[in-house]
Length: 162
Image 1 (tube, rainbow, N blue to C red):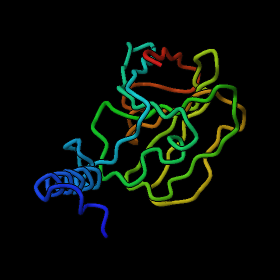
Image 2 (tube, helix red, strand yellow):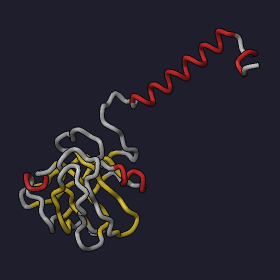
Image 3 (cartoon, rainbow, N blue to C red):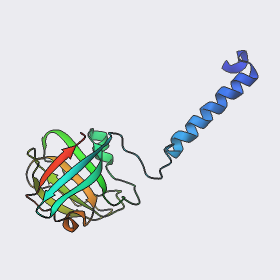
């Protein structure tokens, strides 16, 4: 005897249809976005420079799983958007571009909100990227974002929403 034999046929079809729709919605991403989503919320990073402030809207990668996924498998990154990687304590973690399809720049930021290094990262490479000293945050943006906005090592950063 199958488990569904005691359930009226109509109810069984309704439940089965619902289960199939949920499965398809999950496989399709169900958010209307073609890009993979990363849980963790949204925040903004304000870079203070002599030429004025520049604000980047960022997804937050706080957990190990979120930081590992990062911006992998995305075909593009909207201008003025990026991702902030957050640790609870200073880290020396290394970045790479495995399965990352777009060129990125990464700014490494210490606990005082000072950029200690900015590096250029090429798509689909496993070259290690780290600033040579511990940092608390890393912010990835489209390659060229930092230079276009006059953001350099030593620039101060204000992180909002994390």
